[in-house]
Length: 430
Ligand code: NAP
Ligand code: HSE
Image (cartoon, rainbow, N blue to C red; front, side):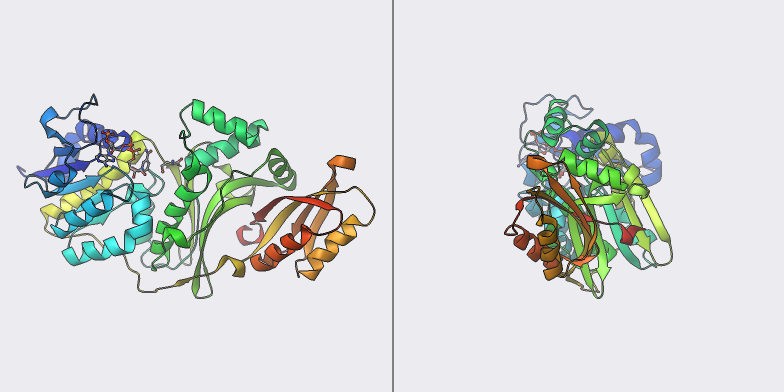
């Protein structure tokens, strides 16, 4: 077993550092599993002066990333730099050169995945991205391989640790969104610019990747309907709690007729659902398939070693395939499903209204719902006088109808403000 497989790393930050540490710590077992030694020969970074405290020779580092891809002493590329550019161009170049690529880059895969899969297939090499969705949790391989003989009907995920941490603290401590976000930033859990996480962009990228695999179709990040958690209030959380729900930011991909519905939004989720028990920064993915039934995958969605674990798993697979001059299974987009417009989806809704506490207001509100063909399942008043609020839970209704109802509520006599609107996923998960 003398063979050495030479690895070029693009990026050596949080995840890259985790990868290098795991490769060093597990070198002997990995060599046996691969059938050859994995050796990091080149590392592309931005700042050559940084002290990275990693078991790598100083002369492996360069700020010329293309030279890493094109080097004769690199057999496999690991891209852990992030962003679409220049990462996308570098990955394309590697694939064109016939070098397998392992990446953790959800943003790139969610926007350009199907084009990259095609390029990898035509070059006859692997493109692997297990770490791009939910860090350490194996979910790409199960969808692509283990469930290849089954028919997946729905994938529902808690795919962003930062937002799950914030919602958990709001639920368990009754704290406001702003207070928990500030605490999360102080503790280093949330980024200084948290937009990608709290705005649902990160979860939308991951949901797009899962939807593509689950439904054999091209689903891009821009196809995902997205709402973040910025407007979730302590009142929303307490109403949900009293009704037997928790609020979670869910990525939901499902088959509706012959289309794929794909969305990310804060959701009232029954407390009895397995995903409701996923606390703090943990991630989980719940899969429903015809033959397998219900499956749930749970674990750490981020961090140097958890994410590094997924990258190294892919790297071992890719290196083994290099050894055997083969490649792993390819993605399929043969079903070519179109995207279901959000207006055509049906779900239940929670609506919170600031209202005048006077006679006739409830009747006017009920008329507005009726006119828009949205049936009310429950209604009650919170507070009195200046603080009066109406809480309504609807039966299942079309999103388009609900939106029209919300527009009309804004002009309904006695309604001062539509304070919250959120989707309630009760029946589909019961
Ligand atoms: P990071 O800590 O910011 O590291 C990025 C690395 O890439 C750094 O070494 C940086 O060089 C290098 N880099 C970035 N842009 C470059 C450029 N234009 N030219 C040269 N070098 C460049 O990022 P990370 O947290 O490790 O994330 C890496 C990837 O993993 C991203 O795609 C991310 O979405 C994904 N991911 C991360 C996590 C996580 O827990 N962090 C989890 C799942 C997936 P310097 O070190 O010199 O600045
Ligand atoms: N920022 C992400 C999260 C981790 O909070 O889950 C990387 O995907």
